[in-house]
Length: 233
Image (cartoon, rainbow, N blue to C red; front, side):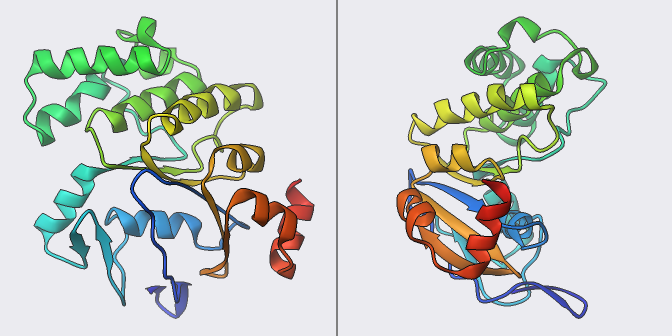
């Protein structure tokens, strides 16, 4: 459970993700999707219950939170890049500080990951010189640079112009093919239908429906889901 004063943002959540599984979380705005994601890596504290990631349990000590954040990469709606650092430095910084990587090792990893997300030729530019789609791909490379066990995506395309959405989704599709464990909050239902092993629908701070994509889209009878799909599809 997660509360903000008298408001309960999450309640009765019973949620598991298997290693290598891709779970897409969908639902109306204000339903608790982003809050759930932020509790998984300790950005939001929980008031009741527990969360376990790769054997590390929350609530826990500050050390436990740090350990989870090392194992869980997160990509936000906004890119959150350091504007005064080059793309290379943005990607290389966390492995140097949190993993103890040498400058050369972190730089080589940054080069490899930026090529992987399709912007290796932008490595020595600054964020303001990039498009929104390119900046989000840098943010994905930065999260991957920590070699996380789990990747969380919080509406990774919501801040992008329509023509940039597809390039970011393509990068995520390629990650799906690697067997990376991922939890993705998204309004891109076509992507969710294609990429997810399971779709979770949230509303009012609760999980209303969990189902494989085919069953979620074809057989759902819950009126909240029907109403949501009728507005989006």
